[in-house]
Amino acid sequence: MQAPPLPHWDMTSIYPGLDTPEFEAGFEKTLQAVAELVALFDAHGIDRPETPPAVDVELIARFEAVIAAYNRTLEELNTLRAYISSFVATDSRNLLAQARQSELQIRSLPVQMLTKRLIAWLGSLDEEALCAQSEVARAHAFTLRVARVLAAHQLSPAEEKLISELQLTGSHAWAKFYSTYASQITVEVPLPDGPVTLPMSAVRNLAFDADREVRRRAYEAELQAWERHALPIASALNSIKGETLRLAHKRGWASPLEQALFENAIDAQTLDALQSAVREALPDFRRYLRAKARALELERLAWYDLFAPLSAAGRAWSFEEARAFILEVFGGYSPRLQDLAERAFREDWIDAEPRPGKRDGAFCMWVRGAESRVLANFKPAFAGMSTLAHELGHAYHNAVREGCTYLQRQTPRTLAETASIFCETLAQHAALENASPEEQKLILEASLQDSCQVVVDIASRFIFEQGVFERRAARELNAPELCALMRQAQLETYGDALDPEALHPYMWAVKPHYYGDTFYNFPYTFGLLFGLGLYARYQQEPEAFRATYDQLLASTGLDDAAHLAARFGIDIRTPDFWRASLDIIRADIARFEALVGGE
Image (tube, rainbow, N blue to C red; front, side):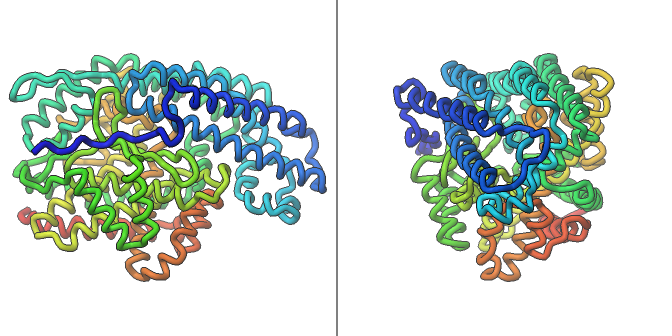
């Protein structure tokens, strides 16, 4: 019996289609709101003042009017962007969606300048005096603190305006080029049953195939394809990183990393503590990789074995089975979490089918209110179910913040993974409870596979990006140099647990994170280990945890990570908390080794 088709997400609750009068009216209405916001900023003189203004009744009224209008307009713009990007992400060949996305980028360009003007103005205000007299200011106190620092790193209004305009044809254009170009790459794979031509996302999914020969051939065909397409992708990477370096220097940041740390609401001490604990744990992850090699009856894993299933007869999780399991597990935690997941499935928030032109990987995007959309490339395995649970955790995080304003929702990436990791861990532990020893082995391996990616592979990506910035300051890097940097980073982190002749030197071309925000890597490790630490607290005191957890999620845009962690008695600036979180993974590694047996 043929499995039912995997769902595509439904966007008709927002507009019936891109080519409809309703969408056109909404498009123009949102841009009219942007124009009105520009007029409001101009009328109230929202920009960097020559002297800090006095906090009086008139200023408080201006502040509250501006914040309300900004929040309202940016929420509307977010919904419009999400709607259009939902078509681009699922079909990069959709020319109408690409055109409307480009038009929106150009016509909403004033918002970038409004944001910079708002930061400059807020950074000049007396935060304490303002918060003492305005409830709106108290609700946005973290926004004011962040603005004060960012304002100190702003250039002149004319320079910032020019940068925003040039980025449309600079880094933003290169990022868009990469996304479109990479999603349209097709690869001929010489499979044992004959050659097939597949989109890159489908080729990469063959890494999960039970047949090692299939995995090897797909891996080799993939590397050859990236090599053929390396020149334009390397050009995109060089251009983006070059711009990032120059702007960080001009704005007075010591480095792009310093800027990334601030934007992620952590400091260098926290990152050092995290990375110190990770370096200590690398030998443990290599133990896991060696145990997996034994389970596969291999002397050593190649890169194309990282995602190999331990058994061709392992449980196949259909989408419907994954749905039923997630609802049951979420319901065991709380009705609110279950209700959110039920709504996501019922209202078709999830796009699960891999297909040509669709973006690889998975993500969750906030649309409006409590409403999100989840993109996945579902695989009928434990990993596919686990990914759904993870992304629905993001959707729950978005729903919990329904009453927050746009500015209060601006969660740093370090804290953005909190709910997703928690939900993913809920699903894993529930799956282990009633599993046979063989099933436990498969579940643990799938979980450790993910943890290895988020800890070990992310460490390699951080090392690589650091290396790129160091060298890009002097000149552009060619594709072979980028490959050499990536290979060295993989050797430093995976060590001798992988075959050094079968690594993946083109991961810089695979991962879209390098083409967007800077250092979009360590926040994932932070998120995994922070989420695991919270799960441990939940196991110790379930009721006390439930009583405060949603409040923590709702507050992730209201303070820096250290202060939020302190609410749970966690000190993230020392390695001890991170070691304790990694101990949870170490216990899984030991359990997996025992199930695999042999040395």
